[in-house]
Image (cartoon, rainbow over all chains, first blue to last red):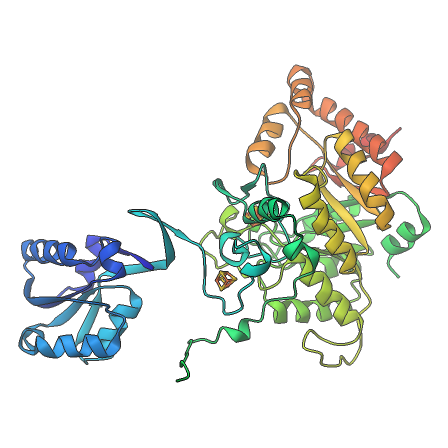
Length: 215
Length: 285
Ligand code: SF4
Ligand code: SF4
């Protein structure tokens, strides 16, 4: 899922300066799981803003805010409250915020910072394991992504800074290449160590990405 | 013609040292330091070393050449994508620079611009391949070059790194990708260097062992805690601790390491960090 966290209060108030009435949008999917933009957080945001003299004209938690059409439909259901607001405050990831902004010309204020595509270790503990490079190498790297989990994204083995299986950039994290090496050894296959990996084809990634499933 | 290439090919024991370009435009002091190192075969010019922003190593290397000093241009993958790297390489060749040391580079997190976006479009192995592609007459996309560079391209290795096989597979990849020589991370453990050379020798590439002058026990501890891939053994730290003149002891330790490398390596790369005057003693005996 997309890992996000709420912006600091000062930054948010700065973005809302001059506004008296906002319509608050949350997201029922990732932002709820991250405790950044679910029912609870929308409610609390409403209370906190009231203390700063900003009233909520209404609110909605969209099932998945990244769904552009669904977001549009939900906004239409709350047309009056939306129209009364100076801006829409969106507690969703950057995708979700843009689902909203692509449905209205009203000011949209994002309340969250989006961090990464994350796995859940346990509740409230998230780890980045894939950075969506468009050219997946996992089948050769024992299911461990060096593009993402090696701090330098190296493709041909560890840098000279690896120490005791730890990453040079942070002794609290393991060196991805040490992990890959150990697991391939357990599997008894050379995997990625059997060849020199060519430079990554970033052209396959496309920016902005677009994908249509063939029907 | 690169002296470094000639001497290593002839099997002469080679000594190199390094300078860092200045932070700023005043280059005179660095050129002067390099002049003091005139006994060396070649001088490495570091590339935003430790991820600290400094003057372009390509420019610094060119200034050394103009002063009659042979440079080894270091290039890292941290700050440039494959287009910028290739274009700098062509520029280096046009300016008469032959020796290269191709590195991944320290992460920006370590340096004075921790907010910078690290590039790492290529890794060090892929950069070696890119250099060899240029030398074969085309760029990485297969387009023909008008004027083909002739480099003597080296790479780095950390012989003391564990697990040995994991470190060595990358060494092998670098050899296969065209590394013509190697300079090592600072080494302190004779046994580990000998073990590495026993495996590396059959691959037939000259290895210049990194020898770093330790000033004090405090410095050794600092290196262990802060410099990735450097490990000063406790026994050496103890020697420095007990010495009345730690710098003299450090010179002695460096000299012992040089003696080890004379037996098993093809040269040394000296890192004396401001004590260039002690180099003759380190190389004596
Ligand atoms: S290689 Fe890594 S970043 Fe790329 S798609 Fe696979 S897991 Fe994701
Ligand atoms: S120590 Fe390992 S994970 Fe960290 S940057 Fe180097 S190779 Fe990548």
